[in-house]
Every structure is written in structure tokens, then in C-alpha cells.
Amino acid sequence: MDRHPGRGNHRQNLLEVAFLAAHLLGATVGSRLDTLLDSVTTRAARVMGIRGHELVVGGAADLVVLDWATVREVVGRHAAPRYVIASGRVVAENTSEHRLGPAGLGGLTS
Image 1 (tube, rainbow, N blue to C red):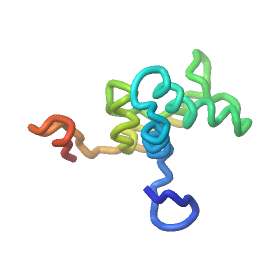
Image 2 (image 1 turned 135 degrees about the vertical axis):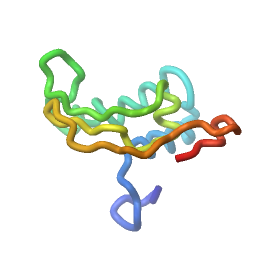
Image 3 (image 1 turned 180 degrees about the horizontal axis):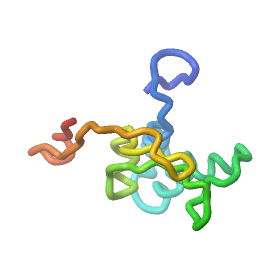
């Protein structure tokens, strides 16, 4: 990830920002990691004045679906989402396969 947004080649993935922040702040597990993920998702939208970015019944259904089971995996891998959903409709799908190789977390393949 380019540490200088606005120049160079970067994916503009806020999960990468959360990944870097987690390591810089020593927040790689527990509630502090949950707070970091929230900081680049619903809290970020709230700070910018964007309404309707809560996961609630009757909400806008604008969200991404990630492959990983835990917040630690989501932030640690900061991979592209499996699906992007806008207004309740799938608008993008990532078909690449991610799986653990024989070396555990270090053996990630795609």
C-alpha cells in the first residue's frame, strides 16, 4: 500500500489502513481491533456525514461481503471483498479463490 494517498499506485483499500494502524497502535486483537475496523467502515461514514450506513432492518443494504470469519482475518488479509452490494443488489463479485496452504496462515494462496 502506498503510504501517501493521492500519489503512486495503491488500491484505496481502507482495510489496509486498518491493518497498518493495528500494528502501529498495538491493536492486533480484541476490542481495539474491532474499533479499528469500525473506524474505516460505519464510523468513517458517520464522521463524513454519510447517512444510512448501518446494518439495520430496512436499511440501504450497501455493504461488502468478506471471505474471512474473524475481524483479525479481515484486517490481517485486507483482501478484496467477495461481493459488493449496493441498494440490496450485487454490483460486483470477486471470483478469485483464497485458501490456506499447508504452511498455515503463511501459506495463503489465490
